[in-house]
Image (cartoon, rainbow, N blue to C red; front, side, top):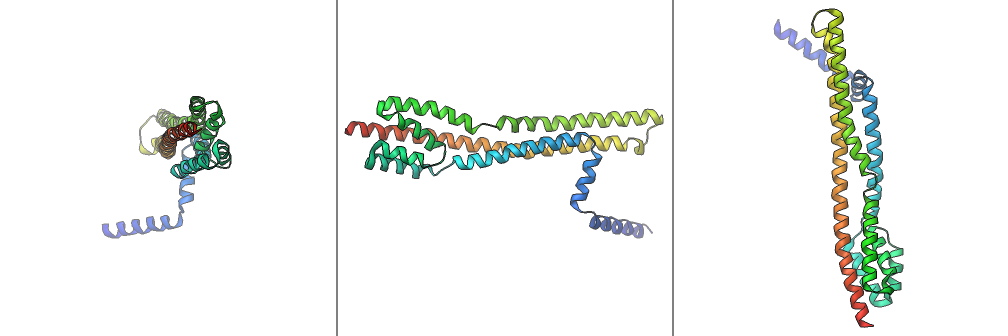
Length: 229
């Protein structure tokens, strides 16, 4: 008898799982979470919008640094500073922009070029980090919204107990469901955005390191060019 009951229960459970799609399941759970789920969803959308913008920007800021510095050195050797400036103008990426700023001051001396590279490098780093503060904000806000929904759900559960003047699973289930769902979705949103954020930080660190290393090579190349004149 017990085996038959268990078999019937599992059969019904499998049938329900086949009829319920993942999308409809998520929609149902989202609706159960209450009003705070919309705020968490807004945090996810805003965070992803800034993340996709940074993905596009950082992909354009990255170039083959070793290949580019060799091209710059060849341009300096063959056509001088003017040829190197043209190469920077026709190249994309943060390193090309920093080199362009330094080469424009090369006629004033190597020290002037070095100062221009350092100044524009700081500006370029700020451009690379633009928007990260908003991703970080959404990472912080999403769990807070989830915990706020948790508090609201627990308040609903205790209000239901007070109205019924008794404690039973059916009475508190709705409030506890809201509490757990908002916390869950808030943490998931934070984890998704945190992965993007950590990737961007690592990417920016690599670009900055390449920028500093290649800038030293450019200064050395300009110094060698000045000694030959």
